[in-house]
Image 1 (cartoon, one colour):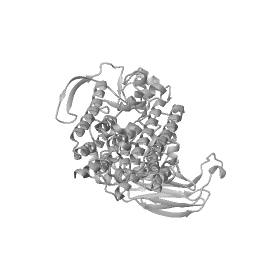
Image 2 (cartoon, helix red, strand yellow; image 1 turned 120 degrees about the vertical axis):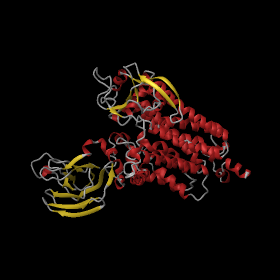
Image 3 (cartoon, helix red, strand yellow; image 1 turned 135 degrees about the vertical axis):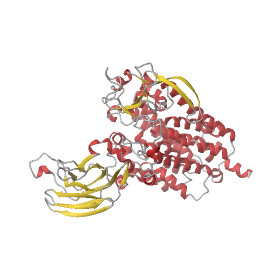
Image 4 (tube, helix red, strand yellow; image 1 turned 90 degrees about the vertical axis):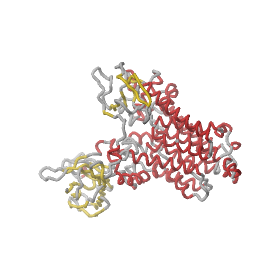
Length: 638
């Protein structure tokens, strides 16, 4: 038993099957990533390329510039004026909160284990930011030196570090060619490079998770003598301490990342390294608690998302003399347990959300994070004995997935402005450590092939994908994947208001119910004045039907223009095809079935395709240059 444990500590894979170490491929790949993305960071006209601030960027942008130019984290009128140097749209979507002064406090036996008595901030000329300050704090020196582009330079450095550490870990278990291919795929043919152009902590969180687990697990697969000299400190207790510190920072950045830390302590306890486990736990608690305490010292509240917190889109506090604190309320002080654990839909949401988490059109891991799925499959199929620490990694990764699909059943991938699943970014890095030893080069090319198929156009056009997130799934292989119906009002298409919540039905004098249509692509033109819409010629328009009742049937009146066409209509898994002559109309009927229950409403999937088309201006006096196929007038029967 003693001998067996000693061999295990010395890395059984590297002793039984020593692989010559070659660090040059990994260094070259990391340098290439840094040069390409770092060069882009220093040369791109970011405000023009980004067009405007989107999603949560406004808050992090303002915090970074406030630290670099004012040395504080308060929002004042000068901070607001500064935004217009880069963006004429202003800081749309900024999260702000009123500050509090702490006058008394003490300890208690329930989370957060202390209480405070506060009063209103006496300084009415300042507000505070309602997001974690850690990402802007790390970006501070980059922003001070390079302005707004400094955020991108930090992201480039983090990507290069992630690639380098991924290569080192993988190369400890396999050859340099396989390691460099897998390390590159893990970062470069996923949605990660899209978040490189975001002034937001998604890529930061991904890097923290990956680097923390690398600090923890590198010594489990490599021997100290064969590691690069600069990495040999990881084979001392300082490696576990650094892992704990990084996870503490990640937890302050996004609280859900706290679930990544328990496996570290469990592993150290299982190995009976009691002192290292106690030190790691103490460091994690100190870093996490210290950062939340710093937030309390700044704004008077430990929870940066709590208190009097609001989002502002058009008019901002201190913009004019009459501007008040009249934004959209966004405080998060309590979990919505009545929504999360609604017994009538809990298991329906859970089963479907787990499925969509992996294969969803707008967020699924297969499309946006395929290397994670590849690593998970390789782990499950590996013939060698799996080390216990890999089961702990698996528990951390799966735990993160379940945490989000259960606690955020209607917005588990980050809201309408997301590209892929931005909430998964913090956990994505740990899936690298599920990868078993792989010897065949062709297997290492699989993530490149699948990832490139789905993510190629997003990686090559990250600004376009970020500015117009509702369009990246309009065409290509993403369209074969199912739509995440539990996130109807948070799908990326919701950023284009003309495509969602379009009112149909409720025709005058008919008495039919009204309902909403969500167009999933731009192959549907509409609506027309008679509450119909055109489908683009030789195309298929996909859409969702949403109603406040469980309707029985959907009726579609299909009309051809001056060109005959063959039409195929699909609704709720059923399809009908028919041929329409020039100017001909026909009705088709579909039984809707139960539909998907969505927050007291029901949703059904539908599509209509046309085999031919015409341009109106060639057939009649018109300025309509659209290429039209078939006209669709939908109605529902209660």
